Image (tube, one colour):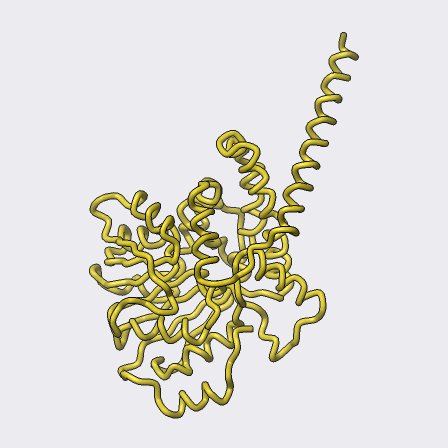
Length: 342
């Protein structure tokens, strides 16, 4: 009897492994055959609408669709807690914790509003979150309880609907890779900031290829990172800081930092969520599992890129100068350099 039971167990284990391999191959096939290339603003909006509607991303990543902060040196931490910690670390790094309640904040690329709610609830800021995705706005509104001073609207970060000098703080996490015109993105972030106001940006960046050009394999990896998640291009930390300064609206210089070490564990942690929380397979069924598996190659490539220095996690802080138009010198510099988003 024991031998029969053991054979039955081995039979079912073999069947389960074979089924898993088939599903993995299906996921890889979808990854290779149906990339999600950037085509327009609409392609970005549609991608985020899909990710929001199916609920898988929120189930595994929580209310924060950005990386977590694991300290320096990094240490083991709960995946969702690390994301919340990232917001508080960004607040401190940007000096926003010194600002009074009632400070007005624009959250550019707010997702489903996780950061906006923390800024409003725990710091007393009046937050406006914008995203290109109508479904993200809808979900952000559903998740925001009464009394939390955070509102959300659909808007385009390359053509913000707000007047000049509207906000005390402009805040953005990981929105830049979706912007085809990095110079225009820089101008809009600073345009809506009040003189003396603070800009704080966290972003995925590529190594500055003006200093060290990408080799053949690095170009292949970057092409996949762009094509799979609707990214037109990554800027470098140095390049985007130059674009901000070239607007003529920055007081002094742009402060930058590299948080690659602090955020690196997020990539493998995000994959581990699917293993540690198998209840997602029940909730989202076979199609949800295949959708999740489809993202694994990109997550692994992200870990490879950030772990080898091909990509870096950049932090940017700037103070808005007390001027209304870019200086002639800065405009000429921008035109001469033609700084591109790579």
